[in-house]
Length: 336
Image: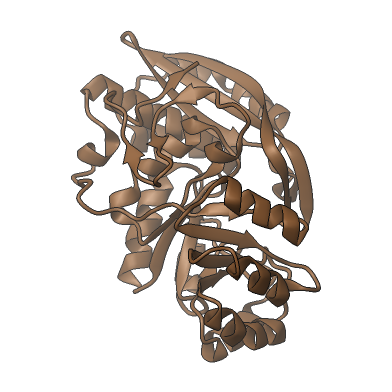
């Protein structure tokens, strides 16, 4: 099995700001695995919050390059176990796991959603993210991309007023992501005000380890609360079941599609709403997320829409928010 790694620097359409950071570019790793004339592609972005860089992922993978290239590939799940035993970070595993799934589907000549015995009769619409900026710039972003659902990044001293102003310009559903910036008291206070402004749910308002605060919020918030930073690994799902209404699974954080599939099942078994989210990534990562859509309640897969220029072709997100799935097997990815 041939392994290739390449770093890309993805320029963004607009400066992207959340409560703890801002950036104009996103560094990302594209991994490719080739076998029997087919090539599968996977992606994992750098992330300063988790102290992950493209260089650190490449170093990890290159340290076991010989073992990977000598590996006898059968299924992505068995390959994932092999990678886990090698001690790679979840981000590095994600890039390889996504590539393995794309390769597996291409070898089978079937898209992943079909291999998983799901169909596209019903699937959720992705939200479009509006990062923190001046109200004028946030409104301009909405007007530039009219969309049925917006995720609004908050974590300022003026959060409710921001939503009031944005509401004047659209009838779209709002979802709020405070990225750990609020306290329990703020969340409980803000929730009814935001509900009246057409907010569907709140994503990770409190710090990831504030379990006591989340328990308080769970009992007093009038809006559902979705875990993000509190739900990284498979082992987090059960605990989140006691403190949240739902979970947002990030493929890069959990280690790819293989653990994500198990997390989706466990979340549903616990009665949680299940969402999969993205980083600011190319169509390589987004097309992998798209394969999971029939299994999800919510999805945030707008990463490639935030880029000035994509590096790959795969799932197409149309201007009316509908999707056009690629005809290739796997995740259907071709690199430009």
